Length: 46
Image (cartoon, rainbow, N blue to C red; front, side, top):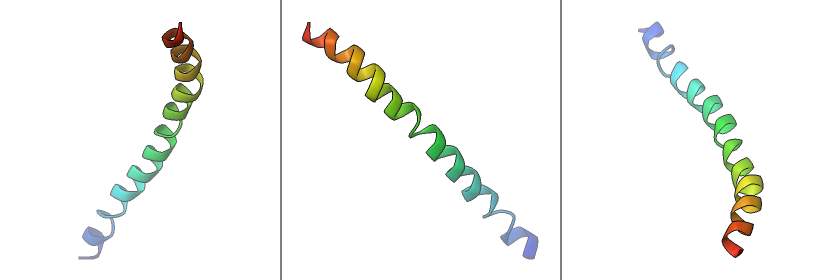
């Protein structure tokens, strides 16, 4: 009863937190701040 309540809820929330923040905020702001604003703005204005 002890190894089923601790090992199950621990590996799920721990793997979802470290994998989402480092991969979501990195590719999103980098493409919208550098590639989308510098390449999309001049292309649409011209």
